[in-house]
Length: 393
Ligand SMILES: [Zn+2]
Ligand SMILES: [Zn+2]
Image: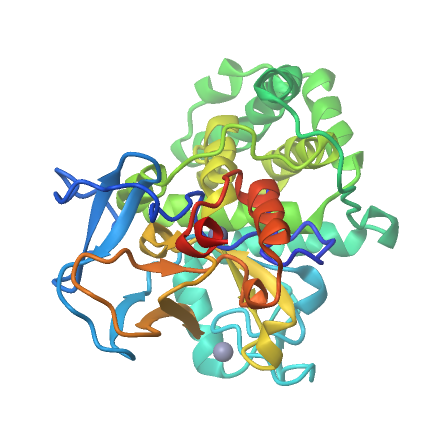
């Protein structure tokens, strides 16, 4: 999964934005999407419409002067701050001070912060259960050697649906043993409190259960993949009412970059089953983990430095409303990250009815050839760009 919005990036990184090309070459019907998808942006400046060729797209519903603030997306769901940037980038507001280590470091959860306000906000955002989860992951990662650092090979074929289904099915028996063992911990606790012994007797814990768990923990770890899953699962647990906003996004049924990437997700799932706090286990299912990847794949935005044209790629996150703007190689909307919020502004005069487009190519599209742009867009977002600029040349 994780497509980089930086064609030169070789990390497991991720993405910027949506899966859809501009609909410039098509003639979109002039009616808004019958019922706006949950989580879609809504304002009187523009409307979301279905198009014949580019899925959902955003169109101006009045003339818009250059510089107009069109939308603020403050609906961050999951986010990943790559491990190598954790000391330099604030875990809450993603502030970066030219590579200096931030002053507030919370060793137990493995994040640094620019201020105590950010540290407190991060704790509120994650909740007690989330803080416990990040602590468990950090404890596991610290115990492991450097050899575990993830290596994502590029250019390998993406696993197809069949391979994905098989990979998850192959660990089902082991996962179920681990889950039973973990749930027995809870039964034991409950039993001792209630004073009955039935719960203990209900589950027969055998060597087989313990072996399943220790075998999972011996596997190589992929810290950034674990961070992706933990962030998604904690968010899912804390915000069940917002889950439909993620489900409403365009999906990618083959979101894994390579067989290694898929294997890292499956292994990380088992690792997390073994260590996350029990209340999170109901959200930690293969289905939910896959759904997070399938929606993140084409919808997440890169979290980059705000200086130097965003040359540093810190990680990525998914802001559902922001995902409704499609791509154009000659965008009329400029997006800018302000802390945890994305702001979208008109970068030129926009006519009533014009499609509103951002670029997925982080400004690189200005100097890239048509062929190169189309190649990167096809590879990372899976579409043939039919924007006005590509069609004109
Ligand atoms: Zn901060
Ligand atoms: Zn284009």
